[in-house]
Length: 148
Image (cartoon, rainbow, N blue to C red; front, side, top):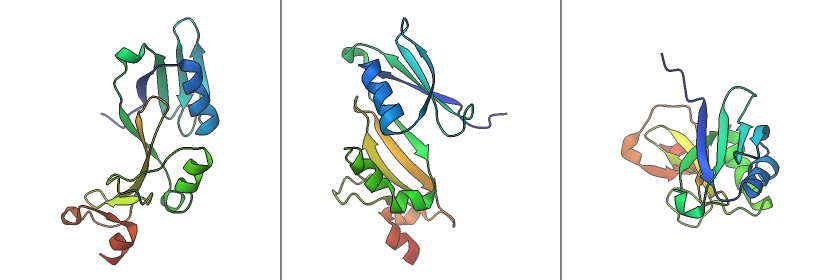
């Protein structure tokens, strides 16, 4: 019956600042806004395929969350770090080893890089890799994944 997740909602402290981030920094298409309710909605990927909702709340009511954007492997490996840095965002990998290199979760397998939004929500670019999962390898560099 379940075919996927259609929408994700997070709380943000300043709706205008967050709209600017998700629309102008990340390039998502805004598909809805209600100033009275202080909410905004964005299409992620193709319109009507997946939606992100932002709800303005006082800072004391915001719990930081995590979600990932599905991307192409080549974009993560060759463009993601430059994309993030060009937008004054700080890329980091799951190990937070300060290398700014995407890492492979061998149990999936998938390659990913992380960054934060203005409210501290942990965002991720992720791509599933071809090949069989190798959970015994843990979290490794893409180069080590290719050697495995």
